[in-house]
Image 1 (tube, rainbow, N blue to C red):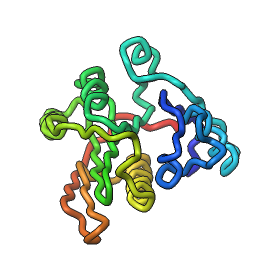
Image 2: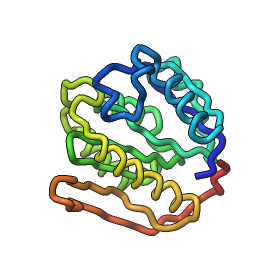
Image 3: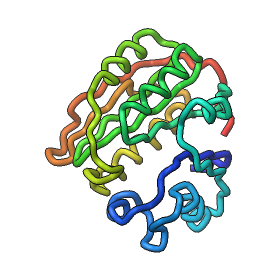
Image 4: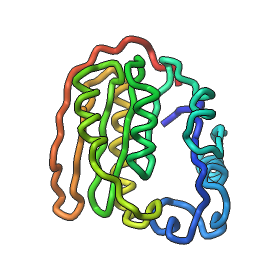
Length: 193
């Protein structure tokens, strides 16, 4: 999509169960996910990314670039980490895209962290209990790729200052969009990718 300044954060390693659903290669098994992904991105695009092989927690959160010209996409596999990230960024003037999925269903949300309606909606979502399953165990590659395409579309819309969905839920089994809502938003600053 033309973006050059990309940072990826993850502390996990590639495991066998990630291969069929997370776009890693067999040779990546046992490697930190951020370094394997860095190599894949270079192979496909020749774009250098900055990998951080860290867990999202207090010491690392202080190192995040929270500038207004950054877009943050959350793709974590548990609600506890989502709650922590939200607690650290709530009331900031940032826009966050949160992609969550399981099996053949996904739920993508756009949260303007300083918008009270968005906060209330996201706080309700964060009350949902998490599942105890290893990362990717219940995911299917076409669900992940479909959600990735939706997130790319949202990023493009934000960049072009177009309306974006507040949330989008889709069930791939039935080909149905379970819920969707869109609103016009006022953009405060230019994004500088």
